[in-house]
Length: 478
Ligand SMILES: Cc1cc2nc3c(=O)[nH]c(=O)nc-3n(C[C@H](O)[C@H](O)[C@H](O)COP(=O)(O)O)c2cc1C
Ligand code: SF4
Image (cartoon, rainbow, N blue to C red; front, side):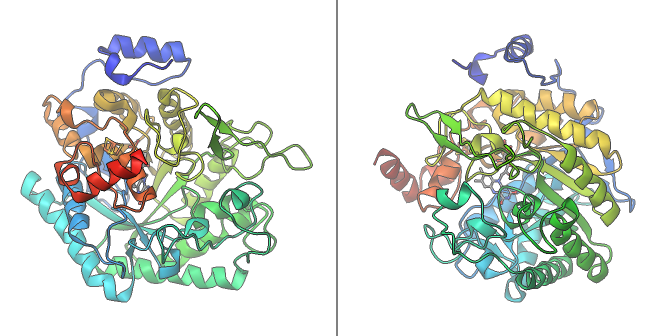
């Protein structure tokens, strides 16, 4: 039986338990506040700009835009939270679709000509909130995450997949009901999509975002290209070809948007899909090709499914450096087929399974893989993911990891939904507000899986007291 984080009352207990698990998570005894603490140190970009500290807010979508892709009140509210978090790097805000058919849900944000004013307003709302709380936004860097949801597109109906696939996947096709005859995107269609990304980046640039993230994570289209080993033609097969989609977008953005920084968030490791077994615990599906390999997990070991093999991610880092990508954000896996990999959690989402490993093992994997990639790319700004499960120990671990140079920024996802001010409190040396620490209940994922907007229903009054909270309780029971 795993031990809950709340049972680990001291740093010594945390260390002992992590040792018992046989993994490595560095942790500092004391968190040193600003201005001398490692998390308070500025990061200097190549163009001379400065990012004021080492906390990053990860992109967090809410399934809550209007159906024409415009932000609604809850979206503005979420971006205000990001602004007052105290983090000085806002990685992308939330996934924003570069065209309507690439939305992950009908309520996803879109980056189109007619939404430019809204995006400008969203960005300035965040910045205004940041200035109100911290006096200045001179050392704040704000990006927009550009996405096409590919295999997981649901542009018109929350529960109806309208997949755009780049190859037929031996396991995901049957898991998500994609028939053999479902068309694969042609090279010509991919060329058109590259243009959509560049157009979207231009829009983001014009409304003032500092960078765009050419998203390559979580099973969405960009990520699927990275494992398109069986795809014939220019966009599949060799790593060179599988990264052509990224390269063409990055080249297009560089020539059309001088001065716009480019980031890539990618899944740095992956596994075959997991499913709940009879006891509810997740187990990994098995599939081997004629050579006994599983080649569909980018960053995974083909001969040892579930194991990490960073050769290709390391090569990708080198390629990205050559392309002029300066910002990298390491994530992992996909929320649709191995949620415990991307988001270590105590409680599974409704479409998930009980954790097949102690969630701290997942946290350690995030930290160690990210550190290995960072070591190979000292000149790139690198953000790590998967910290929310650490709960009260987030600042101690973040400080140890950043302070020892294993990563440049600690990225916070779910914890920003329940307790956005955690970075500000840690930097100021204030005790954490324990009642608002994310306990990884997963309702922010369960709600959208059941057709509702995302949000922290257990801990954020705005959602706790909403009619949707009642509906969520009813749906969870049924
Ligand atoms: C409700 C919800 C929405 C998310 N939306 C996005 C998104 O739009 N883009 C993205 O790259 N990751 C998204 N993620 C993943 C998070 O950015 C983050 O990688 C993940 O939650 C693990 O980090 P954590 O342990 O700090 O939560 C989302 C996660 C959740 C729970
Ligand atoms: S619903 Fe709230 S407590 Fe639960 S995982 Fe999401 S942010 Fe954390």
